[in-house]
Amino acid sequence: MARVVQNPLAISLGDPAGIGPEVIAKCWDNRDSFGLPAFVAIGDPRSVAAVWDGPIEVVDDPRQADAAFDFGLPLIQLNTPDSDTPGHPSVSGAHTSLDSLEMAVGLARSGSASAVVTGPVAKEQLYAIGFAHPGQTEFVAERCGVSPQNVVMMLAGPSLRTIPLTTHLPLAEVPARLSIGLIEARGRAALRGLQRSFGIAEPRLAISALNPHAGEGGKLGREEIEIIEPAIAALAAEGWRVTGPHPADTMFHARARANYDAALCMYHDQALIPIKALHFEDAVNVTLGLPIVRTAPDHGTAFDIAGLDRADPRPMAAAIRMAAANAALRAEIA
Image (cartoon, rainbow, N blue to C red; front, side, top):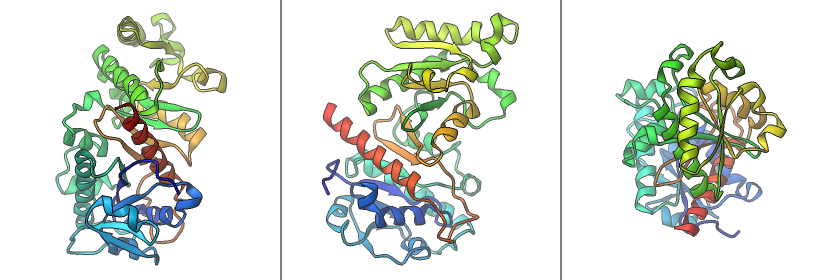
């Protein structure tokens, strides 16, 4: 099949006790029907062999993956002292998942890989070994020398793209975290990312309200008046096509979605509920604002089904396809 990008994608296996090894192996198994380009996995081959009996082609360099891709799953082997049992996360496995992530990012930054796709990790295990970031997105941003404020997590599906302004924090803390500067920074990163990675020359960004009915003129909250509206005005003054603040309960029906390319939402569930309702199986986590392309499937480690041959590879396949498409577009406009 024709390759979408020059160099293969680098895929970190994620936690070796989770479903990452299984879904990546299944993606290679179904590479033609899924329409996937060449990729190389990074991790412990024992974690793949524990859940899959297909061929593995150990390589030293991502650029060897293209020649190996038709014969087996290309894999860069990490030297790990202990193997993990599916469904039973460990400290050793956390070290392996972090090493895999670090190598994948380094390969993309060097140009040896065209993009990074990250498998799911167990944050609890990572925190136990001193991981100081809220998630993989912030880790990748730091390794790329980008401020976390200038990076956005976008959940992208065929008919909707959403961006949570704030992510993993208690709902009660959200209002205090909002600021004009944060909305402006995340809005710019989203708009520029839509141009660079999705080829949308004049992207349209819809910005949600925080409160019901957009605050009802201040009667249900003043965040719209004091924070969100000034940020929208500042972005519009720069020439960006932004609208809002929109009441969240009327933003996501089909007619409303036709009026924007992405929705910037004030908190985690405001962004993730609509995308998961519409695209539970094919939504992709895309990090915008980085010098490299990074995507991830929108699911976790699923330790409860790891090793049972029940994991669905379609979300990982969607992440691989989107990474390849974004990388190809970046190469064209570079």
